[in-house]
Structures are given as C-alpha cells and as structure tokens.
Image (cartoon, rainbow, N blue to C red; front, side, top):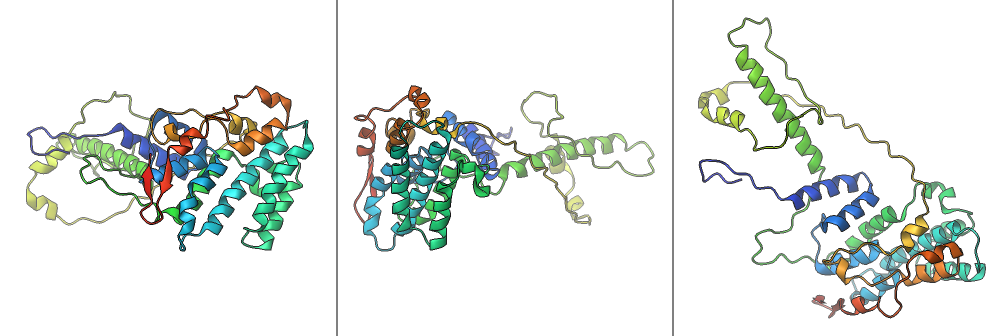
Length: 354
C-alpha cells in the first residue's frame, strides 16, 4: 500500500488471489479442483526450486518411471533417503495399477495385466518398512475393487498424487533448495494458515464496524436506552459492485484526538464457527482420468513434461478392456524428449540443466 501520495493506493495481484484459493481448496482436500486451477492459471501455491517443480509435476502426472530416473543423481548422496523415496513412488504406482486393473471390466489378457502388478509388488517387498505393510499391500491385490477397502473408499488419483508429493518433498527439500533471485521485485510468496478465511473474517468485521459507526453517529442526537449492537453480515449479502474502497472509517480514526485511543476498554474475542462443506462421494472411472493426456499450459513446468501417458499405465491399458483403446496414446518416440532436456546434473550443487 502506497502512503507517499495524498490518495492511498493498494496494489493487488490476481495470482496472489489464486494462491489464496489454492491454499484453501488444498487444505480441504479438493485436489481435483486444485490441480485443474493450477493448470488453467499456471499458478502454484508453493516456494519451490525449478527442480522440485519439475519433480512435483512428474508425480502429479503419474510419470513414475521418469521420477525414478530424474532423481538418480541424489542417490549418490549418503544422507538422501533413497529407500523411502522409492517405496513411496512404487506404492503409489502399485495402487494406481490396481485401480486400472479393477475398473477394466472384461480383460482381454489377464496374465499381462496381473504380471505388471505383481512385478511392482515384488519390488515393493524389498522396500516396505515392515512385513505388515507388505501384507496389507498384498491384501489389496485380492479385492475385486480398490474402493472395497475401507482405507480407499474415497480414493482418487489426484488426491493420492498430491499426498505422494507431500510425503516426498521433505526427503528432497534440503537437496533441491529454492534460491531467491538477487533482484526480483515480485519474490515468490506462499499462502498458508487459512489466510483466505482470515481475510474473509476481517472483511466482515470491517463491514460490521462501518455499519456500526454509521448507526452510532446517526443516533447521537436520539436518546436511546442502550447503544446499538454490532451486527455481522453474510459473506454473500452485498449487492454492490466492486469499486474503489471507501476509506472514510480509516480517515475518521486518523482525525479523532490521540487521547481517545487511551480510553480504557474491555478486550474481547470473537468465536468463529466455520461450517465445513460435506463433500459428496464421487462416482466415475478413475482409469479414464489417468489414461487421458492432461492439459498442458505453455509454461514451466508443464511445458517440460514428457509427452503422452506413463509407460506403466500405457502398458496396462493395452492389455485391458478394449473400450479404453479410444483414449489418446502418447508417441513412444516423442514423450522421452522433454525429460532429456531437463535433468539434474552434478552431485553437490545439483544445478538444473534446461
């Protein structure tokens, strides 16, 4: 906010507004909406290096083999927990393959489908933190549908991939740090701690205070048994269009005598009840969502993503229900070209080569 001129000016950036919305819907686990909004706006609510942004998008796109290949330089660092990293990636890959297998319906080649799932499960046996965890993963293979298990009754690939990245980020954060540009007028910022809800509450309080002061001023010449009470409006009650905000209340506060602010008062708190939205159950074929090539904005990191679909998913889909054959397939020769143009180099500096 500029205060040097006679007319105060407040500067807002719409990408910051998007970050507020992204932080809210992510904290409420509306991850399908979150990822769609990120793609449409090109805005991500997080302070990440280019390496982490690229890794994050590989995970969100389900490019599991490329994730493993991309992170190979870190495996040379003794303090990097490669064991846990590979476990988290393979577990997510395994769950998605189970989902595709269970939703495929009539399978043309059962052996090929099961072979891919069993191969990943075999690799997981060496990485699972305990035998109980491995047995739990084996149990999922026996279920007719993934959603039949209580832990996965509301499972969807978008939420699962977001949580996968959230689990993996602490493992790579210190090795792929964000370096703030020396001269950047618009340094990256992140919305946290329900900032959107805080601003909404303060906005309602401000509107209520303006209305209270107006009623109190107009009732100054009228004898009242008790002063007017503070009333709170609704988030959706205003019918006025957006225009330059009225600073009359602030101007009045600046004009009253300084001794007024020394007048004693009772400190009070406000109890805020946020009624949570009851999310409906989603009914769809998650396989179709995973098989369709996602929308790619023409900016980083989306523009650097491998073309087409993940190799493991592509292999599975070819052995499953023929009705899935109508979905677009990626080019086997093109999709690897973008991965080759973005990779980690070096063992200590971990600089980015684009």
